[in-house]
Amino acid sequence: MHVLSSMFIVIFLMAVVFIGAGVLKWQYLFGVIIPYISIAVFVLGVIMRVLKWAGAPVPFRIPTTCGQQKSLSWIKQNKLEAPFTFWQVVARMFMEVFFFRSLFRNTKAELHEGKNLVYGSDKWLWAAGLAFHYSFLIIILRHFRFFTEPALFFIEPIQALDGFFQIGVPELYLTSIILIGAVTFLFLRRIMIPQVRYISLPADYFPLYVIFSIAATGICMRHFYKVDIVYVKQMVTGLLTLNPVVPEGIGSVFYIHLFLVCFLLAYFPYSKLMHFAGVFFSPTRNLANNNRAKRHINPWNPKVKTHTYEEWEDEFREVMKDAGMPLEKE
Image (cartoon, rainbow, N blue to C red; front, side, top):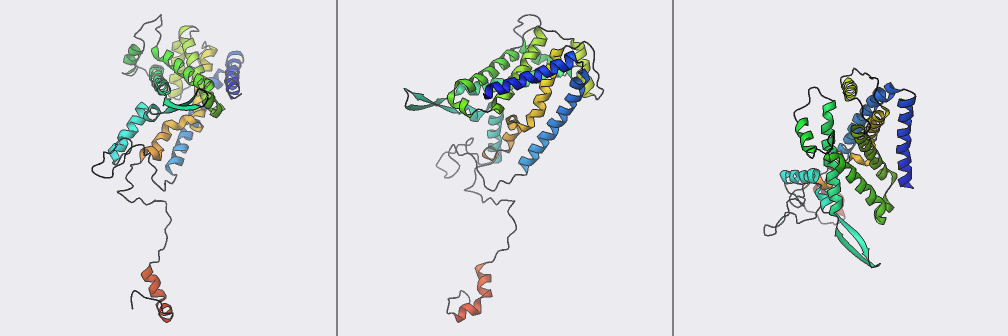
């Protein structure tokens, strides 16, 4: 049910744009107003989520202790699993952000012969996740050719490397195929593995549908339903320079593509996609495991007036003496 409801929502959104921009000719709404609203929602949403995380108290250090921490000199420390210094934490974060190290170590559980639970490596998930994120990044960088004039220095090499197979005219970019394949794998994994399907919610399927639709409409415009690239660039640069224009002759597929991108931007800060910023605020990743060597005091602790035993004895000295109680100071 979650699979179908998410799919119907995306189809409904695409139909709304097709009718609005293609039939009713509301190009200014879908080409100018909605993009500006989505950018504002995205920026404000990300700032609010980051400020909320940054202000959350972290009373105790809860680093992941998958490996031996620094303790005795004759025991070898695992510097990535249990970093002790700032730079060791930086190294762990680097491996986490750029190579998804935690996902690489992910395991899966399967029942063999109906009753034997077997744990094994799940490297396909790591490979698909890595391919998905890096393909998405390269595609975003490639799109900078629509935003800048002249094109930035890195766009030409990226395009040349991405399309070096020269399949057809225009050339077929590898990242387009990899992105579609990775999203399809992530989707099929959710519906084909019973354990994963059981815990999956519409919020897990919906972004996959949206991203798949964005990629599919992009490929469609490049290879099948051609749009005037000059008009598209004129429109996009007008948006970025705050001089919006809506040229005539841009097809409905482009507006569907643009609307889905805008919708994803507005949806981003309030979804699980915010893990791109959340990973930097994860205490299990960004804290050094040095609890044995250093006492950490929660900076959010309220100020408490202490009352030592010496002060307490001075306050009740005469009463204690009359009661025959032992005193440290006579």
